[in-house]
Image 1 (tube, helix red, strand yellow):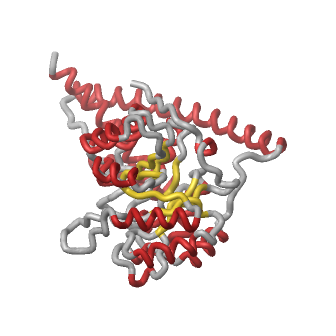
Image 2 (cartoon, helix red, strand yellow):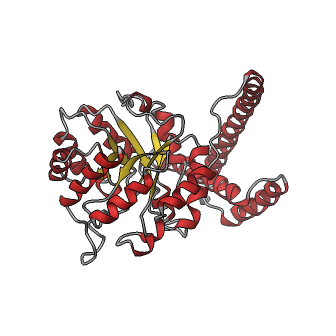
Image 3 (cartoon, helix red, strand yellow):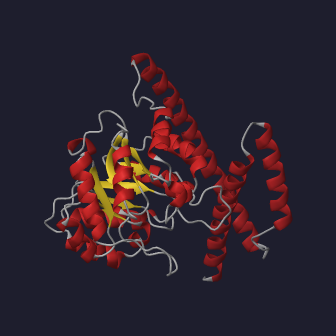
Length: 365
């Protein structure tokens, strides 16, 4: 089953004036005063085009601040009238959609916890049939690109042509310097599958704290993400939700001004040199794949020999020696140790799989 999205390019419905799209606003709408004070300051930041705020905020555990509900939508409408900023809110059920549309919210977004549930996505997409409104879809909490793609496809099939994917990182059990592991390979793969799909990054939820926002935002732009969603609060230290990851509008302006916007294309000389280097990479990749194929052929021969002589597949002592030797050689050649370990694990896993198939074929005769 192939992938296809019939969507409108970002430039077809919003003018970013040459800068990546920037969406900002508080994690939660708390009071009308807080919302309007934040919006007024954000309106002075030229890069910010969309004001975001959480209206419904169910927490992991009950008892905390869970959003102001529908009255917050009135505040957002006042933001739009006073500042001219577009407005955006998260919706998690059809009632949220009805209320957001009634109060003329410009853009809806679907949260990570909702995207994991195809039943919820189906309900939301069905509720938007015949409605011309942009929808932003965050990646699911767990690193599953098919869930993310499935959500995009469901909204697109419901007639939503203005789609944006939001990369906000993934929950991962291993220790990580960020609140959510970026796993950049997943949004990169999404961009490869759908080159026309705008993908923006949410450093606030990846980082979970202010001090790493800039490095993640810069990394996102360097990887050709189409924009950023950064949370901003007029006074983050007293925010009712996620205060540690929010910045003041003034500090947001400084952060955005410090980012380097790199060119996506160069001059003729640059492109010529780049093409030469890419051609060299293509040749090396072909050689590398050929070597891997030859290695797997030898692995198959080893598997047959082990099977015929009733020897176990895994020879732990031999594997330990291989790892030590390859790491030593690779590190001397300037390769990263972690990369080498991951590469060796992948190759060994495939070797075990192939030898297991050989053993099973013999046993089933």
